[in-house]
Image 1: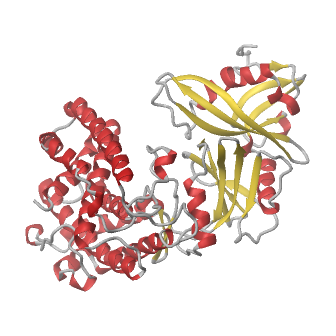
Image 2 (image 1 turned 60 degrees about the vertical axis):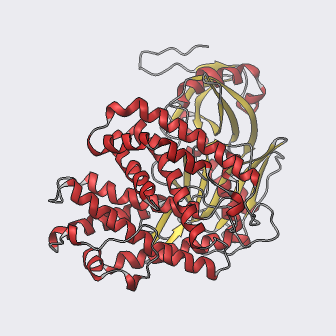
Image 3 (image 1 turned 90 degrees about the horizontal axis):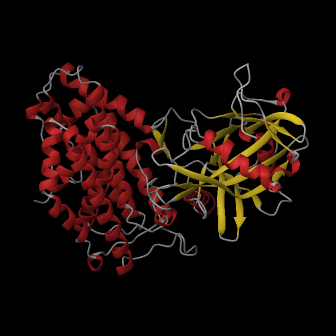
Length: 542
């Protein structure tokens, strides 16, 4: 059954005795599919998250059959086991197509099923399958007990018209239907409902929250261990791209203004980190340099962020979304998580010091010199002093999770932090953790602009970095003033100034330490960004 290369350069088909309609009931097919076929295919996919680890074996742990008038398809749940003693679960919808029926060049393998030649393909590449999913959501029907389709309250469309892939395939695969809906198929799956599904449906159907794409349907599988979310359908919202691209353009314009407006960087008025600022309190020198528009946009983004948190923290019926106070259990969970992460980052930094130079090396050594103090900050979380509440939060909130819609914003992608377990993503946390994530994203946008255009602005790096820190503090100040005002007016208990400042410092430090590992592993030159963030937080309140 091993594949051979024929004279045309193609693999000869793998031959199976089973016919397609009973393929996954056939032990020989499942065995060859899991090893000879999938192991070669899956490692090349964009959505495969195990590239840094060594694959041991793949096992089919569950499957379901779903048929259209023309074809039989399988939804296959895979367990990928790694030599490093952990595993991940993935979802793959599979089709068997004769050559003349193929809608795609993306082929898993040529096969012969009970004498019939054809190809195994990812079923999402077949329009017939995409239509089948849409029709099942619209009709909320499936005779198959394992797979469940749900139609959202906001879904009024009845008829399938068209479908296409949305952009480049990332960790999930998104399909646009009728130019008005997006169905996100989760490739990496968890034996639990996906937070993106939970939060999206809650915001739409319980809270009627208007600043995220409306939930319109979902696909899940019911197993004895729990429900697994396979797909989430939402409205396709009008947008001009994400806020990360928008912010990079804004930052480039602002740094261009240094030269165009002959700004003297050393004379820019500075401000303390976390100082709350109404827009009319921003000094005219800063408005002259950066422009008023960026602060108006920050004001809007802060408003939408606070409204998201008010919605996520205002339900008293659904225990998954009821606000809760701080307690000893949460503190133990937090400290364990952060001390492990901190030690991991220390190890990575010590192993990668040789890749750093200049300011990055200076800041890295400062970080290592301060490691006891940083660890102490993480261990100094005293829950008895916390008067605010914990709620379900976005969990991975940054500019890339925000769409620009004219002068407004949509907030999306509630899956949570990729490195966290599914259970950790559902832990109620301070809403200020999301705010801290957005502040780190501002910091990144500012420094990414300087790194990507290093020959464009005619200033010394030291001067540019000074301007960067000044600008960052004003963006933070305007955001924080607006966010605090809107949150407190909406009865969201985020605490008073001292507690807010403590939580922000704590969460920004956590985020920057988290980022440090990523940068050192993938682009050491950028390690200076989280290291600068850590240094400014350590200087705060000194």
